[in-house]
Amino acid sequence: MKKNVFLKKVLAAMVAGAMLTGCGSSTAATGAATTSAETSPAETTAAPETSKEAETEKAAETGAAAETTAEESSAAESQEAAKSESAAETEAFGDTSDGAMKIGSLKGPTTMGLVNLMNEVENGDKSGYLFEMQTQPDVILGKLVAGELDAALIPANLAAIAYNKTNQGVSVVDINTLGVLYCVTADESIKSVKDLSGKTVLSTGQGATPEYALNYLLEKNEVTDCDLQFKSEATEIAAVLSKDPAQIAVLPQPFVTVAMAQNQDLKIAFSLTEEWDAVSEDSKLLTGVTVVRNDYLENNEDAVKAFIEDHKASTEKAVSDVKGTAGLVAKYGIIPKAPVAEKALPQCNIVAVTGEEMQKSLSGYLKVLFDQNPKSVGGKLPEDGFYYVK
Image (cartoon, rainbow, N blue to C red):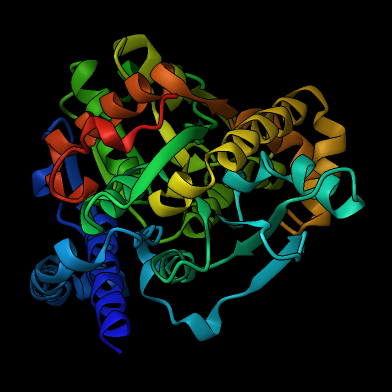
């Protein structure tokens, strides 16, 4: 019973932190842009969530030293964090035998790099992995905390939150997805971040990584008069663009591909990942990482190493065999139609970056977020032990 109470406290603290990450005030940003946002249900509850976080975080940290050696969690993606578990959809694939490594992932770009491995296990060409795909990341959080999952593919900053909220109970083993954010518009004068001077840009993710990434890039390019206007959902922006493609927006894949299919005038003006690379030598714009529970890692290091290699092979095939991978992306329901998946895949920046390169890129990225809002990474930067570089 005591353990269950503790798990609930950690879960509450993590969800509160994720809510803040998704809905936080823009006052903590760099100030490179003038920021305005349309009110959403999540934003209207930001103040109560902040006080809730303070209460639950204190409770969780009180018991952390005694009970969190084997506990850790991932966090929810932005505004989906607070949705109920009953609304979640769970899909499991693979080896159901005892001893199989249990891997959780979100239904999106981070799982696209896994589908080739998932298919191999389902076909019997490989064994030892049970994959669980979720639509709600707070479910992955709860299962990691409870030890029901051994590894998970989650947003990069939320891995840092998990590390900080669980007394260093999780290690990151690879970067699985680089940036998936793109600037789209029919305005042919927009070709780089510098061209956003004096413009209005629509985006999702106020108080989350899209806002932090945009502000970082605007600051680095000395753009001080860009008006960022935030919507609560990417679908809202896609609807605006369908009516007026001359508007400028930042969207993630696969929404970019879907929006462009709906309006032939829309074009990708630039990739935020490439713009980031142009101004930063010490970091990369990231989307997802793979984390492993430390108690599982300590007892099953060979299995973890084997998974890292299998994951790498799966991501390489996602890049080299786009059409075949797109069919699997559709098969597993990540993107319903294979032709759309085939167009989106090359823009999703699927990778498997490990070792010192992973540590350098991820630590630099987290430092950028920390400088804008420490709570976006759980209040402090993770120590070196967060990075599995063997």
